[in-house]
Every structure is written in C-alpha cells, then in structure tokens.
Image (cartoon, rainbow, N blue to C red; front, side):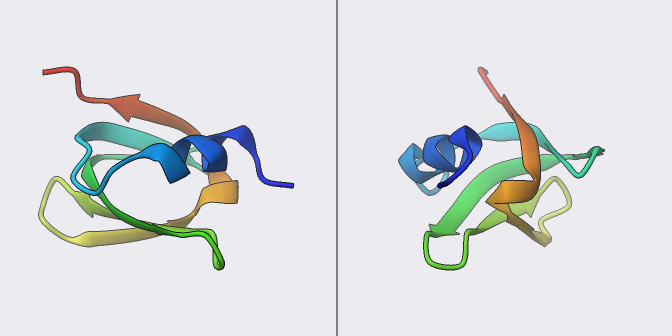
Length: 68
C-alpha cells in the first residue's frame, strides 16, 4: 500500500510548480515536478539550480507548493 503522499504525487502534472520537499528529514528546494514512475515509486524533480533530483516517494514527508 502506498503512502498518501505517493497518491498525491500521482495526481500532479509534469511542470507542477513546487517550492520544496522534505525527504528523510532534509529540506530540498525543487522548482517543479518532471515525472512519477509508479512501478519504481521514483519522482523526478528539477531543483532551483536546474539540476535533476530523483526521490523515492515513500521517503517524501512533505511537499511545499508554489502558489505564485
């Protein structure tokens, strides 16, 4: 059974703007969602420097959305 955060991530469209995530207790600044692979549970983000960040959705505790 997936964590509720994984269920939420499945509903996000590529390009959804974010401010950051908290994964394994660390705050990571990300600017948007690139993709979610349901079979591997890996979420791909772009960080504020333009680099790719990949995280297991099971390790994500919080998502901060960019409302601007």
